[in-house]
Length: 224
Image 1 (cartoon, rainbow, N blue to C red):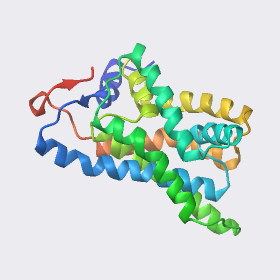
Image 2: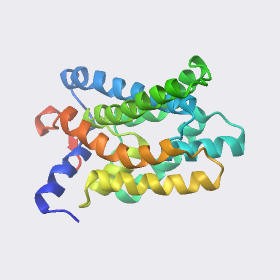
Image 3: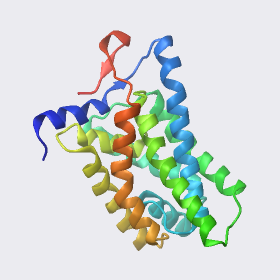
Image 4: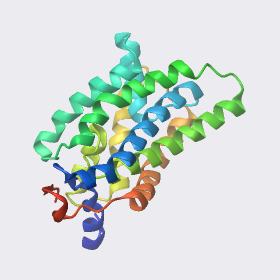
C-alpha cells in the first residue's frame, strides 16, 4: 500500500473524458493515436526481435499458436474479453478505449508483415530496445490523453484507483498473463524478463510527463 497522497496522485490517471468538446478532442486525439501506434509497432517489433515477448504478448502468441489465428487478431479478441473484467471494477469506457481495442492488433500484424525476419543479434537487440520504448512511451501517451485507456491498461488503472501504485499493479497483472501464456507455448526469453520488470516503471515515467489533466469544465468527467 502507498501513502494517501501517492494513491491520490496515481488515481487521477483513471479519469476519462466521456464526451470531450471539440477543442479537447483536437488536443487529445494526436497523443492517443500516437500512443496506439507505438504500442502496435512495439508488439510487431518484439515479435521480430525474437528475444522474448512482453508478458501480454506471450499470452497472445500462445493463443495464436493454439488457435492458428494471427497475433494481431488475438490481441483484439483478448481485449474484448478483458473489457468484461471492467464491469465489476466500474472502469469507464471512452473513445480511446474503442479505438485502442479495434486498432492495435491490426498495427501489430502490419508491422510483422513489413519487418522481415532478422538473424543478426545486434539488429534484433536494436529492434527489442525500440519495442521497449514504443511500449512504455506509447502507453504513457494514450493513457495520458484521458480519452479512455485500452482494455488491458483500463484494468490496470481501475485497480490503481482503489489505492495501489500504478507500476506495481501493472507488474502483477503482466506477470499473471506471462504465466498463462508460457503454459500455452508463448515465446519467453531474456527479453521477457526485461519487459516484465521495466514496462511498469517506464509507463509510469511516461504517463507522469504526458498526462493531460482532466477538468470538469471540459465536459462530463468520470473517474474517481
